[in-house]
Image (cartoon, rainbow, N blue to C red; front, top):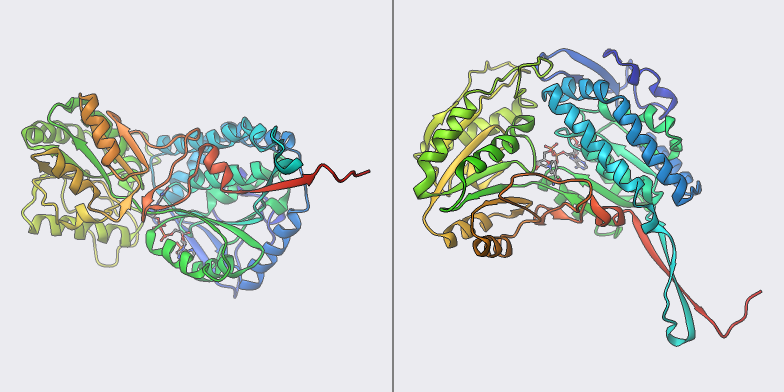
Length: 489
Ligand code: NAP
């Protein structure tokens, strides 16, 4: 380790072999995407070590903790996240690039999942049916679903993990965690906090290594019963294919392409306010951020004017600086995608209203800053409308009828989040009914919350995170039907 943090000092005692400089072994280097500074060199684990982690997790299934104790663990983790909020935010900021204040918000969000599930443990208590069909007594138990493989992306490294891990600990399901190679440090920093909260070490181990190898082992290993994955639809499909023979539970939180609809009667200023809050978090690299704006043609000019004025006030730079609103994109690949979407839209006749293509050098490996970029009159067939851009670009597409806006919104294989701005209850009812998205904001572009289930329709995923539904992703329901005619001593 090179990056100094009190939370990253005693790692090797928690999950053997998962960290530290190594000579000869293959090494994963973590760099600060703002400055290019090397933060850590972590040894990559072999397939044997991943298998060992799964074996240890299997032993963890024998460690039983009452629902009350699991609830206490979760509440303690939440309190420890609150206590170490600043330091965790600093770690997220340097490994991901997002502004530190935003990273503090991510820590709060993560803490909220542990706290919420700590208050829901009574949902997992065994219950007996009042009815006794066939003269049997029917008892329902909620068992841990088995060893869980958790695969996490880099855009919300702590929060995306917290969603999964909080529900798994609540259920008593031991986890083997694979963080993204860009952002493993916040995951590793969580380990000592889990230890302080008395989470058995068998319940949360981290593996760092080749993603294909780890993914395949999770999919094929008979003892891994649940895989909870957040990331791209491309990788989600690989996991689906790899689990056909082993038939295991998959929770897939995949890509999005969120539309925001501004109807003819909408409050444009309100829509702009929400759009600004929603779009530029993590420099537009979030699954729920607005990817395309459909505005009634009568309002496009007003919307553009207001957006351009607000976007001009945003400062782009190193997220550790207090005055910065947007950090860099995570890497060259991310930058190239946004750049390609921008070029394509301009070629198809879109109007550049603010921002635009920044200069990068051929060998550049960090500091991929992209200014907030606003495009109007974007055609529906532009790449940035059809695909997830994952950057700070807002394509605005004017529409003339509500039917057209609904059709265009649904003309995507994704169905994660959508946002609707209208003053009419009946228009809202219709839009919400017809929009095929798992999360819909009404006169709001707010994202998910720990208390409510979140997940996608269509190719945006399977299953839910957050809410009681998210807890049940790590629970097997077992029913015992006992014949009341048969006396037992
Ligand atoms: P990604 O490329 O799919 O990577 C996600 C994770 O999967 C990383 O840890 C990655 O490791 C790993 N991975 C890659 N190949 C794998 C394989 N064959 N088997 C198992 N794991 C594998 O996605 P990303 O680019 O990091 O994240 C951005 C995507 O995530 C976007 O599409 C975004 O919309 C989506 N997302 C969805 C949600 C949601 O809640 N629905 C939330 C956040 C993000 P390596 O990096 O080592 O390859």
